[in-house]
Image (cartoon, rainbow, N blue to C red; front, side, top):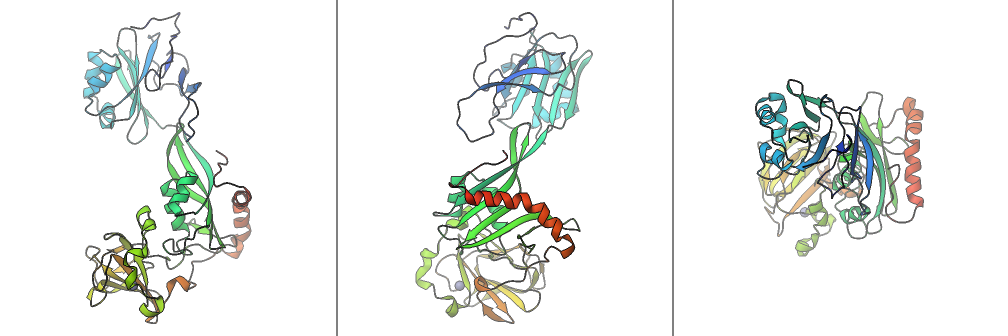
Length: 434
Ligand SMILES: [Zn+2]
């Protein structure tokens, strides 16, 4: 099927997903012709590049030329059908793949995953390379007396991305426009959860900048990681947070002046998500009263949306009360307590006396009691008197200690600069250090 050409295989380079790699085994590296790694959102014309792949773990000795083909696992595939597509006709190889325990990971591959198949001119299998479900690189190669499987950890790289957005309709809309993944925006809402109620406070014209990490494995994006720094300008007030490891090794977020972003209380008892962010109060507006009259804050959200405890505490009531419907009362440190009403149901096994941690799911949004639409009724009480939680300055966690303050300032300096840079640039999106 293929002609060898003086030991080097020369072929046309067809479209993506067909022949990917051509080369000569037995050298220290395999020269590879591939498609440029598809790591950006750009729709630039595809270009052919040459890059050196890591040397195969096992280099078969007496094979001169290997034809590499990339095959994607298809729905309903067997190892036999996948190898047949790659032109392999090799019963001993099939028998090894079927019986060797170390080759089992190939059976765990889901449709869409790539397998690189190396074949000689006889149609015999020379080597197989693929990424396992756990993302290790597995190479199965022919040896003098059979086959061997070796596992290696692929090269991992972390890149830092800086992006900015301005809110026109919603936070998620702005994130989409700036090309920021959902996980990053949810993490951003979490970083500022003590300062901003992303459900009620976000305004048209608010701006934000986020510096976050993206992991790449062998050049392919493999998920977003931590937020390193972020700024959110809400209604003209700028909040900033920088990730910092304190003396005890705890990682937290702190403002420029070392004030902790983490608070004893979350601003919002509803988990922030695409669904809750788009939900408005309009649907049951006729029943809305001012905070002063009804002593709580309402969060309209679909029935079943998770309700979380805004602070650590102890459950003092969990059950039915007139008006509130299914309701939970939690007592917190000092004189604070919170109330969560109209729930469709309580979290499984929740009962009086339970210790609850901040962020724990305690129940689900509903419309039990006096409610004309699904919503959470939330009360914040000090010494049993309701207060407007959106207007309170809530207690925060420990700031950076004075001894560590200089190191903190020095550590965050490059990130402060990045945020300043983002402020001075026009437009909503830029990529830095990518
Ligand atoms: Zn209410």
